[in-house]
Image (cartoon, rainbow, N blue to C red):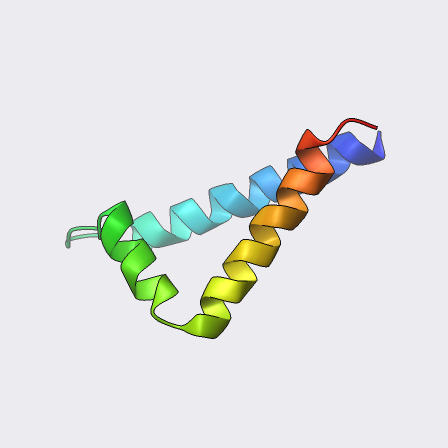
Length: 65
């Protein structure tokens, strides 16, 4: 039950981010994924946060108990 609630919460947050990004970019083109990654990874702290989050998500959702 708790695992399903957590996954649903993350899915809801991801959907909200997508809606806000599309709504905020109305009338102009969205950046491509490689351009976005280049911009994000230009900051060392953002790159570290991205790697830690990716590790955390993989550990919690992909590792069997």
